[in-house]
Amino acid sequence: VTGTVSQVGLGQQCLGDVPFAEALQAGRIGLWRAILGYDPQQGWAFSTYAWPAIMRHIWQAVKSHARHEARVRIESQCTDALSTDPVILVEVATLRRTLDDLVQRLPEPFHEVIVARYGLDGNLPASYRQLGARLGLSHERARQLHTEALVWLRHPAHCQALRSLLQRHTLADYEAADAVAQRWLQKRAGRHGR
Image (cartoon, rainbow, N blue to C red; front, side):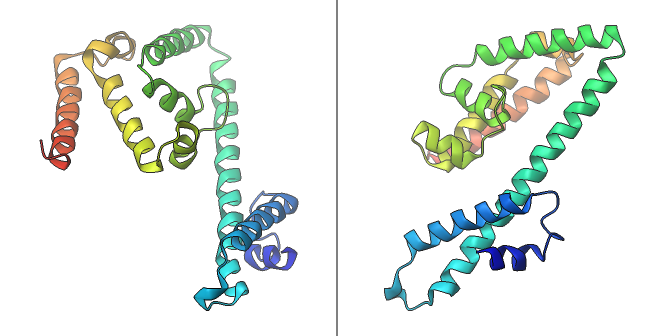
């Protein structure tokens, strides 16, 4: 696996800031997945089957690491910028409290989906596949629940306080949000033959 990680990452060049040990571990996970899924009756050599699985896991580790690093960097920059102006600090705290209240009012399973998807519980944001596994659903159903939760959050009856703070509470703003929700409902009804 070490050789594969070296070949995939071209040394350290394409691994970015991912430590080699982390890429190696991701490659090992890919190898184990390949071992578990390999069927010699299919007529493929094991190496032909395993190579893409190992590569996929290494690149997922690289992407995940890059997303995490970008998030940490952005949070650090925002904290530095915000920590100097007390007015902005109060506005951000009020906005955060209002957003937290709005998310708390979400019915289940929407609440769990939004909290996990955006990492509002302090964890890294979850993928649809991770959400599906957590809820015992397919990743596609997790994606649908996420979309439904966003439609619920956009509804004027639910988001009025947040829109007011963001100065997005004109009639045109509410009509635009309602139009998005109506289009989504029509598209959903069309798929279900209603």
